[in-house]
Image 1 (cartoon, one colour):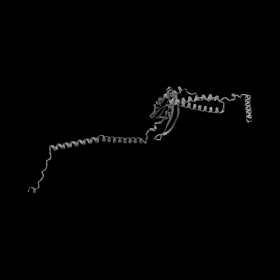
Image 2 (image 1 turned 180 degrees about the vertical axis):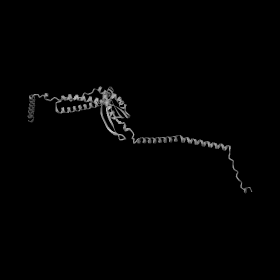
Image 3 (image 1 turned 45 degrees about the horizontal axis):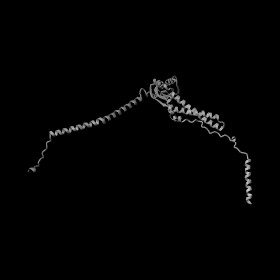
Length: 313
């Protein structure tokens, strides 16, 4: 009985399942409703080809060799003149005539050993680098004495080429960031790109300033001149008596004494003592030879011993 009851129930369940599946509509995925996925971000900087990357290692040396050498030349002078004020004016005029300019000038008062007030000064000028030697010759032309002269040079070609490479990199980055900024619409992305653009533009201005400084320093040489009045070198004089001169003469006499004493010691050690010893040895040998010959030809007579009287008896 149970089997007869279960069989019709199973058949009824199967038929109902098939009927529900046939009546249900076919369901499909609506892909148009799915939002489009954004494309993967692309690097804003173009990758360098392998061939260019390989040649980039020697690019710096080739670029440095292709441009003209940049050398910064500077000079320092310390001169003694009769009229410091007139000399300073002449140096200023010379710099302007050569196409340069005065960087700084300073004139002040000092005192000689006789308590006489005289002017002295310092001046720094810039003249075209190709006229540096000519300017130095003109400055020294009417000087009473040139106490010091120094000319220095610094090759800045490598630094300049490095700045050129950095400038090009920042300019390319700024151009690409400007293009990206035009495509952005969201505030956060716009602010981020704008900050990067501002950074690169600041670096561009900074590098341009450094390059301009190097170019001007190489084109115009700096000359620093210390001008000393001739009166400051005059010796002290009191009523016709010059203590400085007497002291100088005494010092010179002392130096002459030490020179003579040292010279005497040198001659004593190197010549007199060895020669004296040699002469003494020769004299001793002559004396020994003379005694030998004398004894040989004139032998000494031996004294006969006295025999005591008791022995004779």
